[in-house]
Image (tube, rainbow, N blue to C red):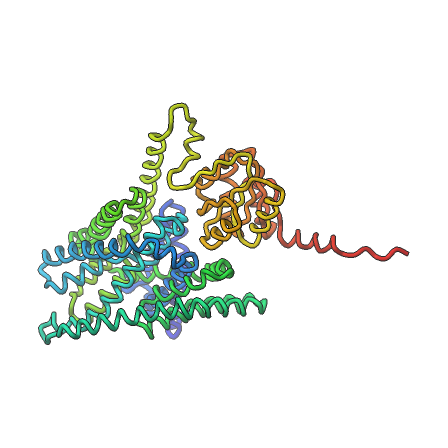
Length: 562
């Protein structure tokens, strides 16, 4: 292996091994994340053989965090963020305090100082951006109420960690007994940090809200897909980097606000699609980088301490989050989703631990225990999340059964999910997707006086549909509960106008399973998508390019008669 190409060696070894072990994990019916983590352990410094550059891997992983948070911001509006502030802000603060207290108690048992215990507990209290969002996106929960609460909670945790990273260095002198820290210095440090964060948010919401969409619209008009993709990546990475360097906020927070100001643009969906491949690739490198930091010897040398640290992360702070969400009056299902989402730690924990070790505020063993807790909690999290969703589904079913009047059929009960509005229409048409294709479909059907229900998961598109007078269910059509809420069993026709062929295929398959007599008209982009949709039950597939070509040919004027 050439010794002068560490970047290439790190990317190649990380991705190739992640693919191999991720595929093996998938074959064994466990989360591919387990394979990615194992790949990192194998190329890390604690196992024999090739050792990748851990520093480079960590920086590459940060790109994944930036792109992931940018993508979430594209589907998240300021209104969404403000709608969950009443639970996200106090909930995150209390949960951080509870988890920090549990970590401090473990550190005190191990004989560490008060400052070391507080840093250790703080590192165990904050969830990983990548893991939380991957879990929500895989379950298509980002746009749900419980998904918005989890993301809002994450943003508050990020802000808390930004404050911690600013305040730890000046506190280090006091903890070591080398100096005093006047109260004025503490107040000044806090004021400067809050001021920088407030200034960044103001710049993004006032200036960025106007400038970022304008830049993308101008680039889109060039017709160059390459330039558009480059513009999206430049905005995401540039704002994230600038936010960190100029305002002292995290890369993740900067990228999130960059996506959020772009969310109001009509180009937000296209921007999401353009960043998806890179986002997924670099997110994989994040898990590889976590594996590289993990020393398996800690499980042999200090097994009880490692188990205790994992228990605080997976059970302790999850239980705290569950109790907090329920205390605020949210349903058990929401509390389960939020608590499972937070049952892990990641990138901020590593940054905090590294800084504290460098300032002699945390022993090396403390960092090793934090890394062990991160590795194991990330490995466990997909199973914990799946279990929480199964419990939530059972609770919802139980509530439906209790609320069901005598004589109701199972089909009727399935059509009345509690969290979603239930349409009263029958013999109607369902339109999934209210974008550039869905909007003219809806307007044409209204002109024909056809009863219509729109399913759309984008807040902006849903609001646009409601403004035009359409009945809207704001959710993802992949969810069976959403299809039931739209009364797919009583519908006559369904138009699937979403651009993603795999998502469309899932919607078609589930709709047909609920109503085999339903006539489904779907949108396709290629012969492969057409065959895929046809196989899953679509009755008619409209190919955009083909239909355009036929329409243009039909407009060709006939030659003048001789």
